[in-house]
Image 1 (tube, one colour):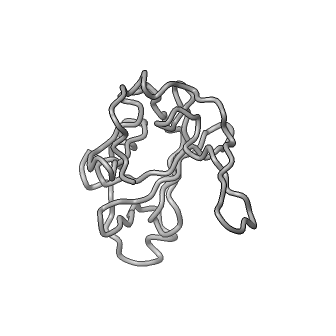
Image 2 (cartoon, helix red, strand yellow):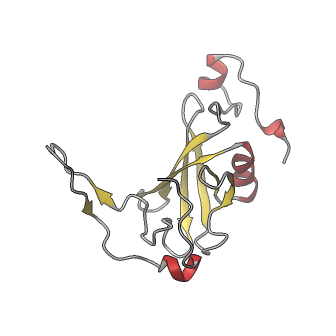
Length: 156
């Protein structure tokens, strides 16, 4: 897929009201992505795409992201089998954020083993140290079985 799928950003009208794909990547060459379940609308994860991940997602129809912790392209599900098949690819009004609506093979999107990466909540109106509540208590898969017992490369 060539770079020609992205139009140059020329005017606000073109970006906000036109039909040209002219995404705005940040200073690191990334654009944020919110991914939801196609059927339920549940938020599954938040990630980033670089231009290559953006193009591959459109070309193949399976979610690709850019891993900031590993500094590399990441085909979601290539290791785990939990591939996200894109059913709808949306971009926001000023083309600086993406919303993917996906079907997930295997039913989970979180590398920790839960269905969603948003498996905990914080109480509204909390005072003092916040105690998170687990909204999901059962893991869909065992991360050690899928990824091995190597430490997670995510930066703390």
